[in-house]
Amino acid sequence: MALQSVGDIMTRELLTLDQTSTLQDAHELMREKGIRHIPVVDPLTGKLLGVLTQKRMIATIMRLLADYGVNALERRERQCRVMEILDADMESVDVQAPLTEVVEFFLSNKHGCLTVVDEQGRLQGMVTSSDFVRLCAELLRARPA
Image (cartoon, rainbow, N blue to C red; front, side, top):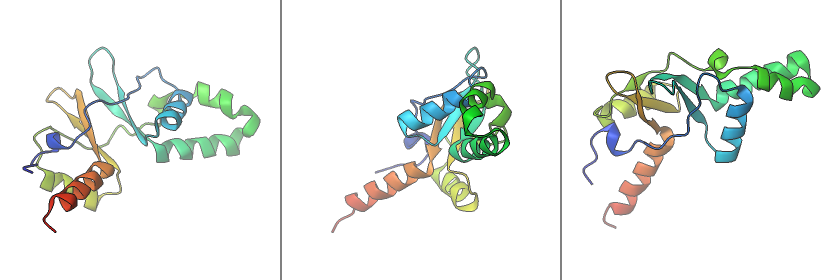
């Protein structure tokens, strides 16, 4: 198995939101699809605007609950735009980034994902800590007994 770059293990088919999406949209998508990171992309340019993480979403929901109560939560989720709460400063790499560098990123940071963009900042894919766990499982299964 000659895996060398992030392009070899990244997820290319991603579920995304755009700048008009709400916290409710993100909450439903995460719940229905069982995902923890949603890239937010400009639909006209394909440019990555940021990533909404499950951690940030839960923190926002908890704040809304504390501030407005359970009866107002659904309405507040519909009013909150993902652009207000996404992480716009997430690091990104290109598809040729060596896996050795990417694994160091995961070991050195508390992030669960790393976006992959082209030279124009257009989203190409995402690599997550789960992708590395899958890679590890494949390598362990492939080694001789």
